[in-house]
Length: 313
Image (cartoon, rainbow, N blue to C red; front, side, top):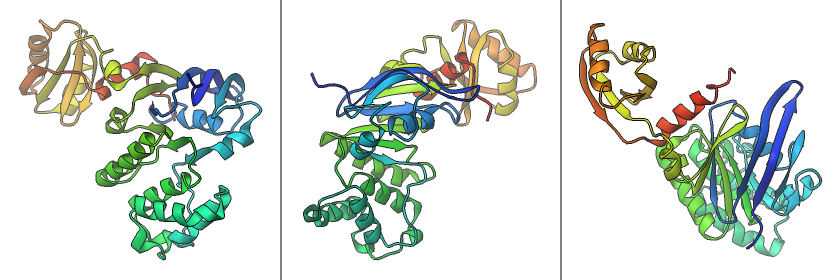
């Protein structure tokens, strides 16, 4: 079997007394779409910066694309694709000029540049916009162009750091179509996100909070980690109801799920009547209380709370 595309052991990064990444260990198989999920401040971006050779670990060890994290930062940078949240495009250059610039930066052979440029334009659906200034493009177009530029040199490993923040659902869906196409061609994709829908698209997920990995498995298996009964509650005043339920002993965890409240409970038999009585006693009309299957978001909320809650900004 070939070695993993990414392998890290007890990876740690400190900034003075603050531990941003705390003893993280995991592997990413070649050809895998690996998701990195966590709230803001969880340590995702710091971890990615270490994996992409932009930041040295304080301690621990790792190997990325066949190179050591401590000694091979420059070789790692040359062997991967990286798309940051800021996209790293030049707004005062045209679409074609940006592609040409990154082709040169990544050392794409001149005899292959025309072919790779055509691929980027077609993939990003920008063939008719090649002479347009990038600064004038919509966010979704910039996103697709940035992804194309990040893989111009056909790297075996691609890092995407929250690449779809701020784009509309249709643009996000097309973006993931491109990711799947890359993965089918053998590219390993490491993507950080805070969108639960995107997390479901990944082969495996690492959930991170307060600098540590709190779950690592397939989306299906992570959903199965929530073993306590879960109920969906519809009522007349969800905001006040949530505050009340969070103080009740029978409720383990409670949070909003769209317009509903999702609550994990200690006792599935007694919970519906106890919840109804508690809310109606405070003048809150209960429309329905029904058991539901756990979503990834439900499990994520519970695991984050169990690991100390979201870190203060």
